[in-house]
Amino acid sequence: MALGQLHPDPEGEFMLPPARYLVHLLFQIFQRRLTLLDEALDVIGLNGSKWRVLYGVWRLDGCTMSELARITGIDRTTLTRAVDRLVEEGLIERSGSPTDRRQVCLTVTPAGVEAYHSAQAVQVGTAQHLLAGIEEADQRAVCRLLEKMLVNTVNDPALARDIMELRIFAREV
Image 1 (tube, rainbow, N blue to C red):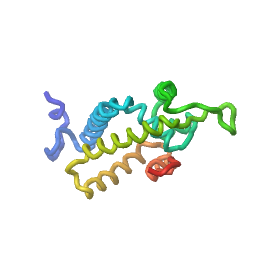
Image 2 (tube, one colour; image 1 turned 30 degrees about the vertical axis):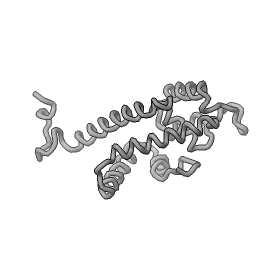
Image 3 (cartoon, rainbow, N blue to C red; image 1 turned 45 degrees about the vertical axis):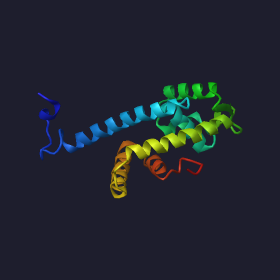
Image 4 (cartoon, rainbow, N blue to C red; image 1 turned 135 degrees about the horizontal axis):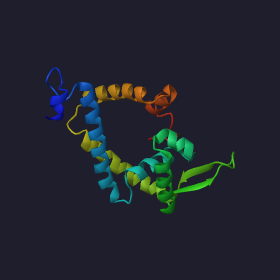
């Protein structure tokens, strides 16, 4: 028996009830987008994980690991590995915090700024590919839906608001 036959959509439109199908599609789109992005970023020596970290450090214009973990949603072990690789590659650097000796501040190097701009162009191209043929009105409707899902996902309403309003980022896009 096929998966869709176990718990079909009562209206028969989808293989699963809409709530389950929506989550399935989001997962599939996210995974496949990461693959496309990894392939495109590989040309400039990055991957999706390193790009997210570089993007976060660049946007925050210097940050601590805790701040970076908060805004990227990347677990600390994965985040530490990505930061280590970016430091080794000379794209970001660690330095002591001027206000707290126990904290390490992450900043983007000049080479990291160049990599950021190259990766941003790749990101924009990937997003355009992903959204090809989808009208702006539909994009806006999906954005409104995803905002509601984000609020339900993030247990901190202030963090959800900060993410949606890009207040977690210091720099302009």
